[in-house]
Length: 255
Image (tube, rainbow, N blue to C red; front, side, top):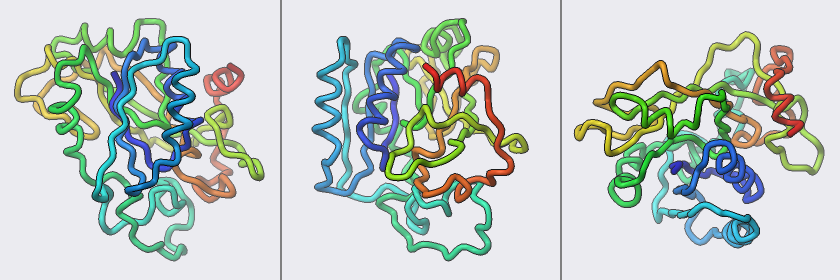
């Protein structure tokens, strides 16, 4: 299973994300924390219809909260101001705080997911719905976690970007064909086997606390920045002069 959260991505992107990980990682279930405001169920019917159209859909659980779960003092995560590599932040007017849509602040949510839904699951990974795990021919991330001594592996992510944004057309995974050549930024996540991890292990946002991950069995993923940080131009979320094409992304885009 994969535990994730949605912060503005549309149903088409989520369905593509689901289909990809079912095919490449053998994912059979997913728990999605939907950060939309109470009463906003815009994507639910589209998500349901898309799952019903799949030949072998995974089990999908969508959770909602009556209270904002974002950081209290930050603007909406989608705003370019919140993109880590956005240029000219010192010249931006800081948008108003929006805890309903800001960067996730209540990271204890993963412990809640473990207690309520995932504690007896075979293996669980934690990534975002704008992340795609890259295969390496050595088995799925779940297989790797099962082979780890304490049932934990690291997932290491690299941000990627579209070369351009099309007018009146939503950005998709396939538009992301570039990486920033001069950036060392990495995103950390995890995959765990609950039955093999220490009883004291704690599920946090970027790591499993009080457990030793098997670094030799980790996996990689790309974080598709244009899906979470909405903008009219790529140059608003990353210096475009720093972007170069990536062969792995080009191959993925063609597929």
